[in-house]
Image (cartoon, rainbow, N blue to C red; front, side, top):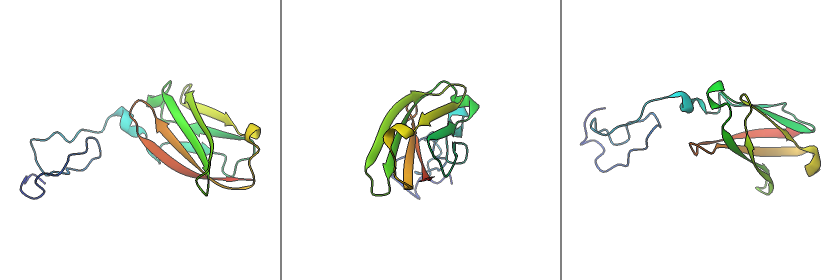
Length: 124
């Protein structure tokens, strides 16, 4: 939409793919390589997991710094780790945390862009 009068004063959120303010003079950002960091392109496996979590990232994010926060279903933080991806792969050993069988959430944050995704995991 190119009519600035439709949503005047709205804050433009760069890179979200939406013309928030409907103003053609405001840069909306374009999708680039770093925008590959999304729920569909980040694979967390195995699920269910036993003693480790493997994370596969798009090749464009190889050698980036990431933050990983694992919480139980009640929001209790199990771990908060910063790790560097190596060739788009990261393995987190979980056996040291003595996790109970159950449902967990992992928040994966690209520290460069600040973008995060959340995945649900089951511990066997």
